[in-house]
Image 1 (tube, rainbow, N blue to C red):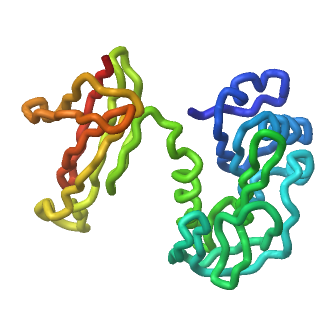
Image 2: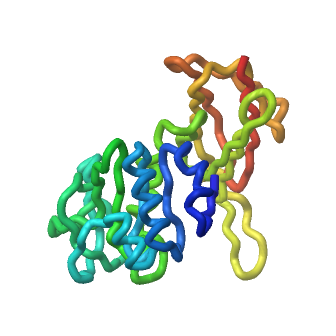
Length: 248
């Protein structure tokens, strides 16, 4: 969901119903609004915010961690998996304290989690989460996945884009596979079906049945997976699948 900040913090009612809030874009927040975000965190919420997203007064009210002067780096280590990843060159401010989530090859932390009351603040010291090329650094989507895991009623595993919508009988999951469909400047190339993608859809609740709106002739059979269900299928190269999941 997308929620907006009203100047009157007394109207910030729904924010406390979200387990995770991700700050997006440049936020012209007042000190009172920064304090409201701090209240949300201390009340049990998780907030992800990047360097440079809000004015100094709001950042101070939110009590963002102190950071050093800007440095530059390439690549990073993702602490939860202890894995090294490549990235474009980016600027960051070394930070101290908290639980390190991402650091440079030299061990300088640029993303960490800080416990605040019943919740936690996740601080990314890369300005706006963007590299020098103005594209999001790979650590940012990794953070999104890390913070939202287990919160969705359905999750998709596989190299595809996906979205989920609720309907009267359960969920509708849209799967998009843009791979295998080159777009040259001139002409049309054949689809490369070697780029088909295997996908697993997991539902937190048991499923009664499943069907594909675009490929109704294909029989989809959910199988039990712990307390929920699992469904495996293939998304062809350059194709879209819309799968309806019906719960009992």
